Length: 220
Image (cartoon, rainbow, N blue to C red; front, top):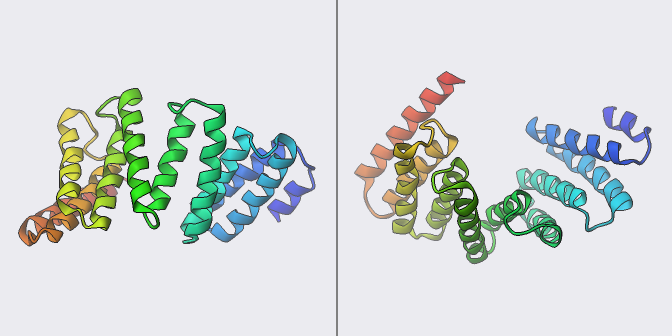
């Protein structure tokens, strides 16, 4: 009903922005099928107003990709993130935050497809974030976690462990000990240790992860 009301307002840039934001809220609330439809409407308007190679169009392609990702539609997710990244690269330098984010989203989507390309993209994202944000920035920690997770998926357990411990060491350099990457990387560490035949150490990592999640949930 809300979407129908907005459609009656006409085809304009403000409407496209409202639809885009509405799609984002729908994803946050788990209404992903509806989010896909709303994002498609926003995309149609932005294509009509700005053309297919405008940064705002790319933004909506990215939102649509995220909605498809939650639905498990990997092929659509990857294709849309590729389009998003290609458009942004035409407009901005590689160091632009939107380009780095799109590159990161594509790398994440490719974890379930072309893992070799995924790893190359993550390495590039990591280098860009370190250069422009600093070695110990929270965004660096999150990319390192994703790289650790990817290496677990590939069976590169020693490499995954090394990266995971690098994230944990960042706590001593100012990273918020309650940052979301910490809990996630502890599980990645546990899986990497288990893969190396170290169940005792893996159990310790799981226990630390449980303590972390209990503490952060209480804070919430």
